[in-house]
Image 1 (spheres, each protein chain N blue to C red):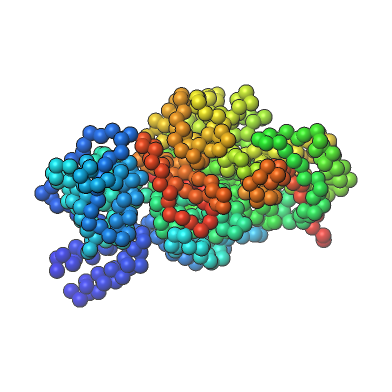
Image 2 (image 1 turned 180 degrees about the vertical axis):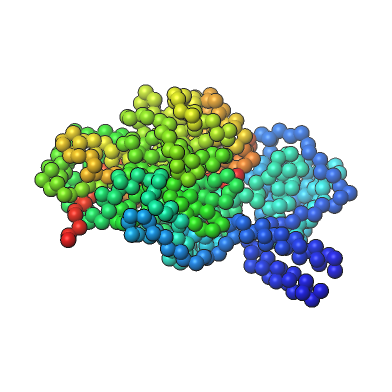
Amino acid sequence: MKNIHSQSVAVLGMVILLAGTACTGQRAVRLTNIPGSGATVGGGGTTPPVGPGTTIPPVGPGTTIPNVPQGPFENTNTSGLDRFADAVPNRAFFQSQTVAFDFDSATVKANQQKKVDDVAKHLKSKPADLLLIEGHCDERGTEEYNRSLGERRALALRDALGKLGVNGDRIRTLSFGEDKPADPGHTEAAWDKNRRGEFVLLEPKKK
Amino acid sequence: MKHVSFTSLLLVALCAMLVPFSRAQESTDPSRLTVIKEYDPTKLIPFHISGYTGEPDRVLRFDLEVAGFKMVEAERAAYKLAGDNAAAVRGVLSDRNGAGLFNKTFSGGTPRQQAHALADAVVLALTGKKGIAQTRVAFKMAVGRASEIFVSDYDGHSPAAITADSVIVAAPTWAPGNRSLYYTAYLTVAGVENTTILAHNLGTGERDVVARYSGLNTAPSIANDGRVAMILSKANSPDVWISSSTGKNLKRLTETRAEDESSPCWSPDGRWVAFVTKMGGRRVLAKASSDGGPITRIATSGVLNPSEPSWSPDGTTIAFTAQMGGFSICVVPAEGGEAKVLADGEDPSWAPNSRTLIFTKRGTAKRTLSLLDVPTKQVKDVAAFSGSSSQPAWAR
């Protein structure tokens, strides 16, 4: 009997130990507002383990909601992003202005300048329009190196627009590194297409 | 009495539900003593296993090969492990003369966990170092056009999705104590998609925003005292910044206007942050004091285009990726010097033993994870996942 008792104590210890570790299953959804935006962010949380080599199980929508700090983000410069909230993206507008880059370079080449000129001209004619510049890389770099390189490319294009008189406050940058190739191939031709900066026109929401 | 037995039944049932996370318990025959031998980690240990079947047999062989052992015939083995997994996993470890080193039995958990625990016991007995067979890793896995953060055992078994955002995620890393993960997620808030560094409590599932500034927010690395190093471009250039564990007290460590930094990592003593930058037009590893001050190059002689440094927990060595045509896993002394090329692959992350690395291999269809025993250069692939997997980070 003593043996059984010590076993249950051991099990109890294990359960207590587990309560503090990552063994939780799905949790109740708790919505937390993001201050100033009226939005919520979902999708975090822990899920039950799945067998190796199986397809990913359907993970419930918003199993856990992140604990976004209340009040203004003390640590987040939202002012830089607030301006772009609810703007309407128009991806087609500058589709033919996508800028190509050389391997491992963020220099805006002379033969790409005309595209930058076109974008500047439009933005100057439409003062209410904003711009998103997405920076992309080919796969011939390590992932985080490419994420920084893609940002550098987007920033180089923003600088080029600044030289043409476009206020940088109207532009935000987003680097995808090698995570969003235009062409999923592994050839020189695919890589040429993937080293790029894309302009996404952001139009004011229609009242 | 009845009450007690009901309680223990309930606890047993609870335990059964939680089996994937419970640990194997060790009991040792007290009449035997564990002996630590002098040993050269660069030499494979000729080893023989007998008596096990199925999964425990496979687990023991895998774990010991990762740890620098080589399975050989009984006559050629320096050490032998004989046992069985009929009821619980048990094993007698002996040397080539048949002298017993230990006799251990493992109960609780799954047979898989018991085998991992026995492998760790063998590693401890013969190398004097704590094994890694019961550790976990985090990584990024492609799911459709998006990706999610996963955590699995170090050998790729029991993977579990940690995120369910259906967005691109990247660069998972563990906070000290392994209770939370930090990573980058391309979260959309109020219609604005932006890189966001999140701190994710694995116990509660709660997430805190650490950095969501205008521009790039990525590549978090957590010091042993909890401070965060990361890449932010809020000052119009991708630079290394450090902050408290929650993202407060931001301090900019690099101010290279023309060059972009990437992949910061802390020295285990928290004095230095190593990262990738360019000097004289060439990609280099460098470090800066976490108090600020000048950037010092970390020489990586013999290889080109280093990136993705990972500082070993014992402080002696930096593992990194060199890019020379393909990608190579390399190590260099932490103060810089001659780099050693170890294997094809990228993005190495140290195990807590400062000996084993987990890294990414590129195939034509997808990326996969492998383990590298640095002194012997043995490589073992982890269990296959359904999606392209990369950016592994070892819990430690």
